[in-house]
Image (cartoon, rainbow, N blue to C red; front, side, top):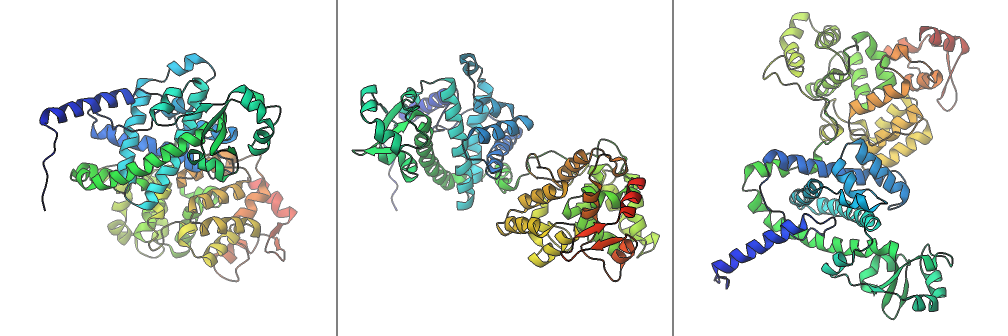
Length: 531
């Protein structure tokens, strides 16, 4: 095999590198860009990781927006994204994507916001170029963000001709006379255009091959190989160009990946980046340490997510859990506000029903103290996010919406008071491999109110539940729909034997043919009295 020497001299290569550096410096200061030129300069490993995680949060916001039932690029869809970015305090991206009505707002796009956007895009290219599935996910949400940003930029500065021309998108403006002459076919052949709005819309023509998305959706008028595009649909044309560029760029990044991964530090950061948890850190205990062992039974029925409620009920039934279950449940209890002393009491009371106190201290006490940072390297461990639980699923740990089969999941939902219609909605989501959305739907069915944001963490489920019920302690909740709480707390049918039967034998509940429970007035009054 022969290798030919590059025809460029060393000086020519240096000049090329200087030119690329100049282009990169110029590109990162542009309010809108195709990410054609990689960034230059130095970035610390900590900032490298932080910038990538920040952009991942933004792309996941776009992913969540696709599940809330709002039409893409509608005003409601855009408002959802901006409010979610603001809630997460992603100020740089909120600034880049916000619509602004005054010209002064265009000038406040800070150099730091543009820098973070430029660098983080190229970092995530390296993380998401590995498989076809990762590439498809990255392209979809980057294109959505790019198009929203283009629309916002046009609102701030209508003159984007230079950007379009620099990227090979040449638009021909339609004169008023031609527009009037084609009035009828433009109204009939263009989506969301009426005779009243025709003259208020600026029109452009492009070769129809550059507007295939619009042509496919029958949203534009075609004539002599040209597509007549209203100004509001320019984003589709530019987004198609960006998509094609990004597909090629990811293929090139995939070829360069082995060279990048020669640095073991970068390799460890980029591997499995798509599974990175980007929500709140639940390493610390709750706002106050008022959750005691006596409260857990009531809290588990009322506010624990199904994964933790299942672990609690399994612990009560068997008086033990495997290591994975103890870790998952123990760290969750720590984050909801159970102190170390109360945690020791809680686990000891249950475990010593099947073992002596000495065995508990020798085999299990160390692990409890270790989770609270009192043993070993004395690190305070975080409660497990959904992303980590979904990857486990061994023995008694895991997520019911991923690791249970349909029959097992159906029995759990019935025992938790979810009716047939609600169960069908949850089954549909689990069959589409969307366990977190299934958990979110479960929360909404139990609490009878929409869940704001996206379900990412069991402790997030718990905190939102306590907010909905109006208090931290279960016994101080007021103004609550008591019949609904009872329904969600009772098993689907009385068991003829075992702990469930003992707990429900005196409830004075009447079960109808559909398996729904009807509570007697005496029981409702007694429950109100005991609060």
